[in-house]
Image: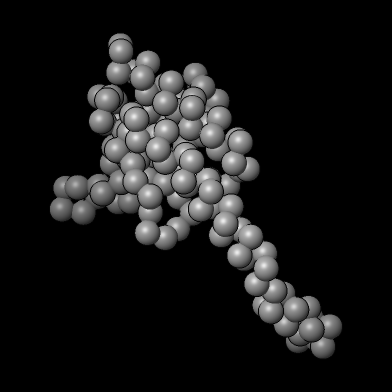
Length: 127
């Protein structure tokens, strides 16, 4: 490895400021988004990680895949069906009836998406 690449690597690995700033952003996002979603979905703060996992069958009777497709089509919010992220073992897919939400956007966008998810889920429950 060239000395210039080594020096750049050393500088990058020694910078913890951006890590602390990013951690604070995620704490803020999780803290504001989770209570909104808890109104309609079975979701809680993760012990660690960048994602929220929510059960979609608290107020709805549709699959995680159908939930994700319709949420995108009707409310322009993208989530990932949990069943896509696990495989069946002993007749059970642990991701089934869950969605994974990545809170990578800024706080305001995450809150907007959460409000749309709440509205969508309430609409499904009323149907």
